[in-house]
Amino acid sequence: MIRIRNVSHKIGPAPILHDISLDIPKGGITALIGPNGAGKSTLLSLIARLAVLREGEIHIDAMKIGEVSDRELARHLAIMAQSTHVSARLRVEELVGFGRYPWHRGRPGPGDRAIVESAIERFGLGPMRHRFLDEISGGQRQRAFVAMAFAQDTDYLLLDEPLNNLDIAGARSLMRLLRQMADEDGKTVVIVLHDINYAARFADRIVAMHEGRIAANGAAREVVTDALLRDVFGTDAEVSLHEGHPVVLV
Amino acid sequence: MLGPLAVLSLFIGAVPVTLGDFLHDPEGQRLLLVSRIPRTLAAILAGAALAVSGQIMQILARNRFVEPMSAGAGQSAAMGVLIATLLFPATAIWAKMSIAAMTTLIGSLGLLMILRPLPPTQPLLVPLVALIYGGLIEGLVTFFAFQTDMLQFVGTWLTGELSGVLAGRYELLWLAGLAAAACWLIADRLTVMSLGEDAARGLGLNTKVVTGAGLVAVSITTAMVVVTLGAIPFVGLIVPNIVARRMGDNLRRAIPVTALSGALLVLAADILGRVLRAPYEIPVSTLVGVAGAAIFLVLLYRERAHG
Image 1 (cartoon, rainbow over the protein chains, first blue to last red):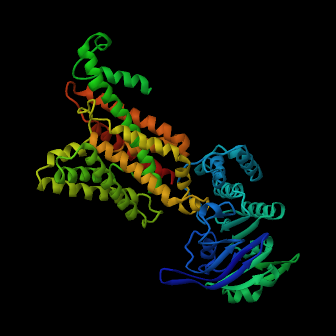
Image 2: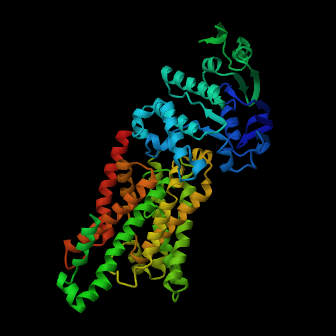
Image 3: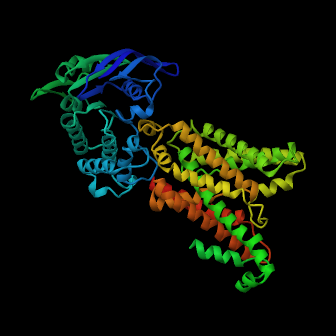
């Protein structure tokens, strides 16, 4: 479980998060949604210790952020940051292989290689494993980065807007892969999503944020409502139900 | 390819020699041991170390077009030698070298601090700022040298050439070679760094330690080359770029190729410099500079066509 208690955060003089307390239970997919500037990405990078936590406490199981070492945390939590623009020319299989770095620190064993192989196969990267990252499409690159996070073999997987720049086929297949990781491998996936419909369709829980506060927290049906769209997103789009899932009619 | 070129290098110089001279003539053997072998080794060591240090600098600065020799590190090393010579004229070479390594480290740290806030969306801004930064330090060096009548000495540090290499006067370059070899030992860490600071920390890498280690390696390399040969620009720029094009940035695989290619480039330029106007010589930095500037332009245009 990720326990967030009384977390506030400023970037420069600008307050980004106000006194946030939130429990993200173990297992399943939790989606963070909210308009631009709501503080979703900031909260995610605080959980992943990429931004320095100054006010409040975050625990991941028994590990306290700020006290646990980067190296230890890297074996329990993987983060895929928003900008996966990497200037380094690496081959797909090399990138996925670096997901094992927290475990082997430079000396991969047969176990590491087996996990990398299974990640490459699972994410359908076999045909392009020897290509360089700047030679494949944006969707394939995004998949390679998720495969790297998968190879890191952590209980927790944090993703910041992984659907950016993906077409509908790429976005759906990526979400299905994440769903599979939650259902079959028992991973806890926390994902920042821009598109509410993807959150409603694939996530077990939705946390809606607004101006640095938690606006709603619960199952998709409870959270995604006309009122949420009006109050949090400031738009009058309608919500309809399709086979039990709320769908925003845009 | 390096082997034959190295052998060729042994036979080329102001005094013509044959294999027989090296084998039978004591004067020929002395020439070989005191001048030709040291000179060839110096070119190989300096070329390899400079190319690797360029590759490391490009990772630390997160930009492909930065190179320590022209981006402040080389000039800071010259500043260090100047300070050492002015303040402690009687001091030993290793003390001058240590001071030069220190000023180089400070100079490189300064560069990274200046580069950090630049927007990553403007990749060409980084080399421009780095060149201006290097030019500023060079201006300072020249000013102090002018004030203290040291301009001639400074000239030898700012223009790298190998005609002065003799046994006993190039051995510091082995330190530069060692620094480059040490980079190969932490190649995986450096490659993880190239994924970006956030991704690297997400993988549990201590980015501060790796940045520090990389900077120390770059500084030692640059300072040793400047102290023994003088500044040789562009090797650290073009070699890593060409290697990255062909085999990517996985440093465990790339660093040996980079080192070999850098050694080849400097050795070839030195041989050419000995031949073109024989019995006079063209400094290796001039030849590499002319060729390097042309290749740099091609690289820039290619990058823009890609991006």
